Length: 265
Image 1: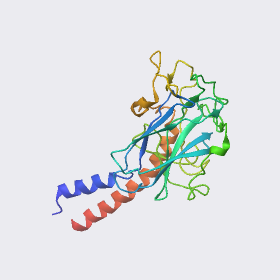
Image 2 (image 1 turned 30 degrees about the vertical axis):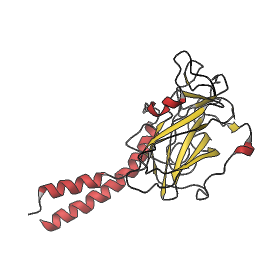
Image 3 (image 1 turned 180 degrees about the vertical axis):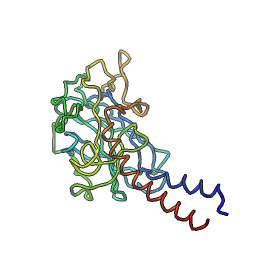
Image 4 (image 1 turned 90 degrees about the vertical axis):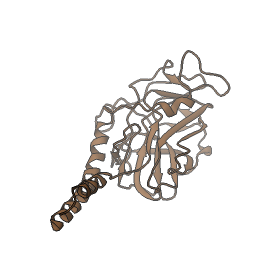
C-alpha cells in the first residue's frame, strides 16, 4: 500500500510552484527625496536560481513600462542582504509614478514593487499625470524621466523585448503572474505594479534630505524595508494573472502525483 504520508508529502511539494524574490519595499505612499537615500527590499530566493538579480528604476503605465536606469546588480539568493540603498536620482515630474523591476538572466519571470514617489529636495510631490491605466483601471501613473539622462545605466542585455512568465508585486507573497508593465513579461503582457495612494502629499512618508534628519514623524528611507504593507486591492488584476500561471504548474505537478498514486495502488 502506498504510504499516506508519502502521498501527502508529494502533494505538498507540488504546491510549491514559485520561489522568485518577492519585492517588499517601497510600499504604497512611500516618498523619497532627490539626493537622499532610496531604499528597496525583497524576500530572498531560496532555490539558488537568482544569483544575478538586476534591479531597474521604471516608470510608465502597466502596459508600456519605461526603463529609466539600472540601479544595481545583486545576489537574490543571499539571505544576509535583502535591502539596498543608493542616491535617489533627480527626476521629473516629482510624482508617485516610479517603481522597481526585478529580473534575472536565469528566470523568465519579472517582479515589481508598487509605485512610489521621488520628491524634490524638500520632499514635495505633485499629483500623478494620469488617473487611470489605458485599460480604464483606476491606477494612477505617469511617464517620468531622469533630469540628466546621461547618468542612466542601460537595461540588462538579456532583456530584449517582451518576455513571458509569472511575476510578483511588492507585498504579494503569493506571487503575481507577469505581463508587462503591470503584469509579467514585457509591456502589455502581465500584471504590473499598483499605484500608491491616489495622491501623495508632502505629509506622506518622506525620506530625509541628504544631510538632514526626517522631521515631523516623516518616514526615512532607511525604514523602507519595513514598509511591507501593499495595496492588495489595487493589485487584484495582477494577482489573478499570476494565479493562473501558478495553477497551471500546480495542476501539472498534482496530476503527476495522482498518476503515481494510482499506479502504486
